[in-house]
Image (cartoon, rainbow, N blue to C red; front, side, top):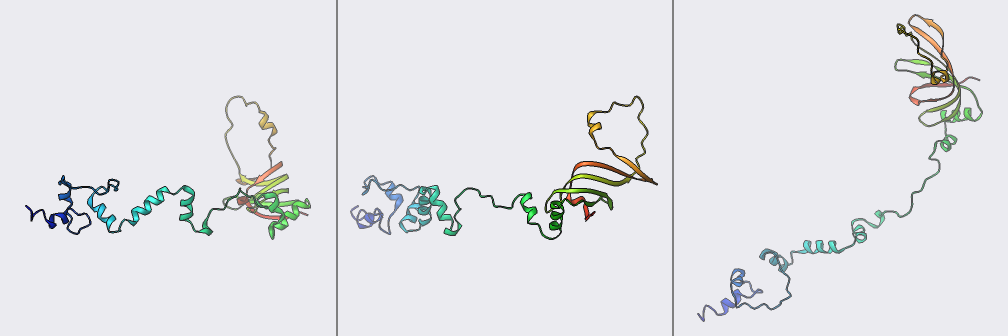
Amino acid sequence: MADADGSSSDESLDITSDKFDPLKALYTPKLLLTNLTAPLYDNVSKFESVMSGMSGKSKKKNVAADVGQGESSRQRFLPHQEPVAGGKRISEGRNVLVKMQNALGPLGVLYDCMEKRTRVKVYTRNASGIRGHVEAYVAAFDKHWNLALEDCFEVWTRKVKRKAPALGRPSATTAADESAPKVVVTKIEGKRETLERHVPQMLLRGEHVAIIVKTN
């Protein structure tokens, strides 16, 4: 027993020795712990990785967990990538009224017509061709050629609607029907008819605009 409990057994219980036997150390009641405040590990592999210096990633994770939210953001971004502090600034020229003054080219001519109160004729289109035209004053516009018009006289053509009259007494006209612009049929040619009306104000979408010309 003396030979069995000699230097070989001592080396098997020495944690710093290459011949350390962890299973024997677990079942040996005579093993004395040299440091009672030593860290605890889940298994021997974890302990071996720490002893061999291969737990750098775990150390970094622990450090990152202790870092505050502000410090972690500085670690993720470079100095020139940091968020800029300050309130929201609204630059000039981001509304329609200001942009109309800086319009160039055809939009600049349209702005001149609006300032000089020059009456224009706007030719409108439908899915198959020219629908008609609108003579009016330009009140406002944007880069998409959406037009706000005033004192509008509209002329357009459409297919003749031939519907059988409804049976029974005619319904009474409502206030909305009385205030609606009056549409007048000026000409009928075959299956198409020409209509005209006067509208105080009109909003015309840019996709319906074919061409704009001055009337005087």
